[in-house]
Image (cartoon, rainbow, N blue to C red):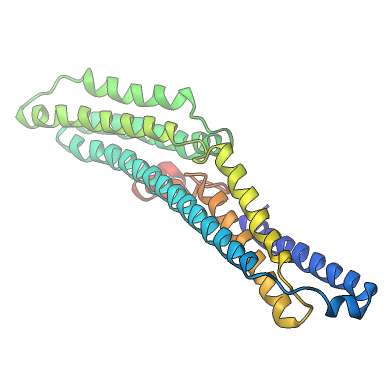
Length: 261
């Protein structure tokens, strides 16, 4: 199911639940008699104050959660760009080597990039883990560079930086493995969902009528809470939930290997 369909369903469900409960509550009051409805006590000022404070506290917690998952996603994307750029730098520095060795390095890198984009990325999104095959392919690239004896000053100058760039790619890969899972622990999600239920539930402690304005505000408020929770859920996956869009750094630098060339 598309993320947009999930969002639309969540917002529609939140609105429907609040509106149905509100209308049912008003229906019961009308069945009980107009006199009881007219004699219903006004909402105490302390209740309005507590409702406002709960909403403010939950808004702060929700804002911190959104900021946390956004920061984690940004850091994960930085690691992806660092990994792709390091491999691209290897191909650029290999220009001082013979054509045969350059082709070998490009083949090694293309095999690694193709494996990462087409096989490892879906596994990372679905199972929150990397494959051992990717580490083997990166190890082959490192071995081919390390076992090549530099010939001449230019190759000597390029030799160590190429190994350093492979090490940078390996470090970025390890960071990608650590960030493959969801950011927020289960206890935080429990707090967010419970807080949402309490915050929306407090609407019913107020004297809400069936006027279009009151129903519209109640529906919009519940839809807003559903949207913000969806935002946290979506950003909680540092590399996305619906595909390999987060691997765009590899596609931009290695279009042929990534299958976009």
